Image (cartoon, rainbow, N blue to C red; front, side, top):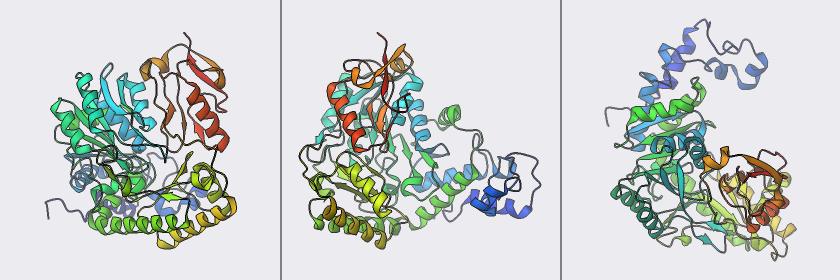
Amino acid sequence: MSELDQTKAPIHEALEQFRYRRVVPFDVPGHKHGRGNPELTSFLGEKCVEVDVNSMKPLDNLCHPVSVIKEAEMLAAEAFGAANAFLMVGGTTSAVQSMVLTACKRGDKIILPRNVHRSVINALVLNGAVPVYVNPEVDKKLGIALGMKREQVANAIKENPDAVAVLVNNPTYYGICSDIKAIVKMAHDAGMLCLADEAHGTHLYFGENLPVSAMAAGADMAAVSMHKSGGSLTQSSLLLTGKNVNPGYVRQIINLTQTTSGSYLLMSSLDISRRNLALRGKEIFKTVSDLAAYAREEINAIGDYYAFGKELIDGDSVFDFDPTKLSVHTLDVGLAGIEVYDILRDEYDIQIEFGDLGNILAYLSIGDRTQEVERLVSALAEIKRRFKNDPSGLLTQEYIDPIVVASPQEAFYAPKKSLPIMETEGCICSEFVMCYPPGIPILAPGERITKDILKYIAYAHEKGCQMTGPEDAKIENLNVLDV
């Protein structure tokens, strides 16, 4: 046992002590322990609103932690094998942006796969860094983007020796992992930082027989979405850093954009969840992996569906696969993934994570049980029986290589004009267009709009994908550079 005690949850313990002291509140929040908003108290419960409090000496301050929050961060760093950990209350979007803003400044180059979450490109809009995209290969059957190949990364580093960082998805939404150990070494050998978006990889730090985590691979920074597979409250996350990153500077960067009123509900949920994973994570994620394996076997036995797994591993563009991800290819049933998503929700009261044009993702984690998985399997079998269709004519391509003309910041802030979306072919986009989830842009600021992209957008819209990003909420018009 180290000098840090992983059975402790210092923020949670301090809040419990605070509750019992019955402190008279002449500070914010204005609901005053729930008394001023009885409807909210009735909805959330007294215990919850009693600990929805502001920073104060006994409870520390997220912007400059020196006591219980600092101890919680030290415990998290130890549990995740990092030099430092930062509690984030703006979601993993905030963690990703802080990571990119730490590594890059205006004009710096950063090497990254194009199938990143919008938060990465948002960070480039904010700081003016320039992306050097490694366009991932696409699995032609599944239509999904794979990982970055080692040779692609090596070439990008060779062609851009002035780049300051390489960013890796570890894993992607679909469970695909690049060879992050090799990429870390290549980046470090070239004097660059290696950053990891681990929004979907919390469990990699605690489970067995799972892909390597970013910190174990030697990465310099990782954004870890504790609320996704780690069990904490929505919007709570961690930013992890290695020994070669200045923690004081990272804190300054975080404080540029993160709230000065950190939610103690979110912070205590991170604290309690870290303790749970540190003490029981290995057994928890073995159960999740076993459940996913059972689900894959049962779904593949239905026929026509393809719940893919480790058989995709090729040692390079699919260096490894996260077995907890239950992704299912649906096109051989004659249905787009988003159509299966809608049917599951509307007719079976089953809410999965997302459906795209060819696949669905059922997110399995810490709270799932066999009976829910069996309900999903039964529903998919029934959907096949009721709705099986001719698959011809369905689009399969999930990823289209972008043509980058300008940096995201330059394009986002440039003079622009609004055109009907189907009249924008050949123009340079100045905003985002994406299906959400998964939140990977179809178009990002600075990219050329092509006929294939417009066809993809129209098809995704027609199939019922939730499109987001443009200024025009109806997505009938698109802002393009006025050149």
